[in-house]
Length: 232
Image (cartoon, rainbow, N blue to C red; front, side):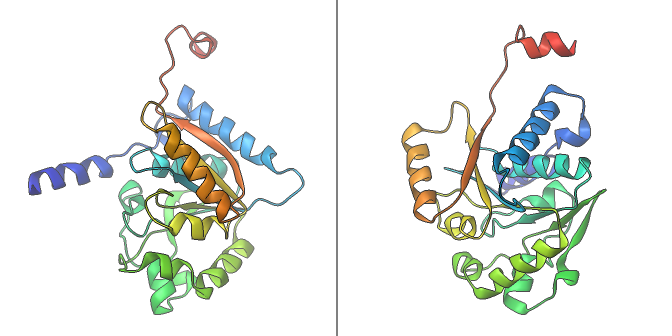
């Protein structure tokens, strides 16, 4: 059992951020397309807080959120990436940082912003990790302190990206989506079930989330696709 656990943690730790490792790849270009679509999604309204979630676990929402945060930073924006998955946080592995101090320190122990924010190592991108994993994440995210925190960081950054748990698993994503300007649902090709996607949409709409789009993850392009021809 312990061997399996160590192997799983190692897989998370070596997660590649393609927008850094291979910025000229087709996948990185797709992330820049996502960035453009987000920028044009709400032309008549400011979009500064963005939530990434999925219908179920293992659909790649955390990797997508991290890469989208990076391409916004590469565009020259001041970006803050927050690991708001307080049940299964991964951003500290992705960016090789300590899990604490983090978001839960601020929400439960009254640490201030300057004490919990971390440099990601990339120009323009700051990171807030989870902090100590709490026993009551939904209650913590729903407090007035969270509202005050969101208001504070809106003044400091051009774009704030939250990585939230899957929407059908727990209520955390519903709570956070109501506080964000836009929500994006990540869908794993060949894995996500249609009935779960419909249910996830209904759940988010019930919390008055502004769903600005979906991202199809793990879709494999055929080798004769025109993108391959264009970039060769």
